Length: 78
Image (tube, rainbow, N blue to C red; front, side, top):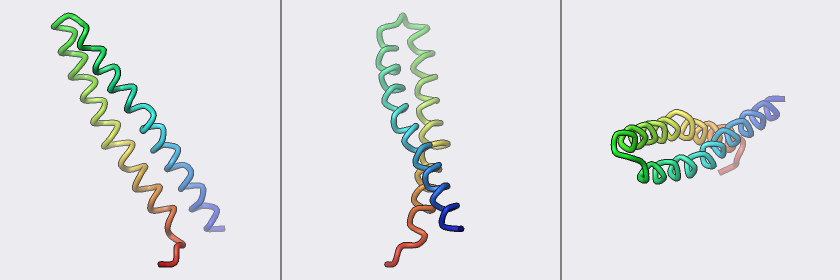
């Protein structure tokens, strides 16, 4: 029964991790598209996108990656 819980947590972790992996390039594109705006808006958008990129990476993607790895290799024989 514990195996099914670990498997469920592993799947939950990689779904969150891959969601971040798919969303991060879109944020990079938004960041580049902000270059075409006028100066006060351009700076504000670039700062906001940089902040969101860092938060996505540090608060969602890294914990989800660690969670996935931790719950995925608990029964491996080394």
